[in-house]
Image (cartoon, rainbow, N blue to C red; front, side, top):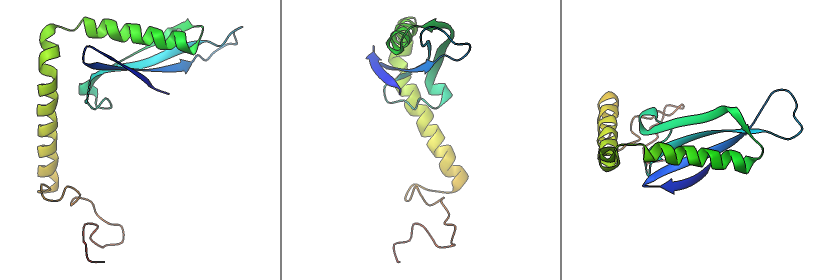
Length: 130
């Protein structure tokens, strides 16, 4: 399960992963993680930075999680100061552009955002008369 901490206005999310391969005397772990601005959409590549450790192993799930948090904090701390200031406005601008591009591609959806959806039975899914 993904775990999260906040650091300097960023979210750091870490997922400990069981190591695979030849058997070992103890269960070994890796991690996958990402850093994003609070409120960003982390599944969009331009709004998050993903990182992982799949070579080094950790002796417990907690060790792997802590290593991921440390790596995430180092990443955030290495960002230039202007990045911390401008990221929210850049994300908001990208979101606005994406929404307007989507609306243009699907027709004007400003009054009804689900108007681009089509029902499989031929009826209008946005209709209120049923």
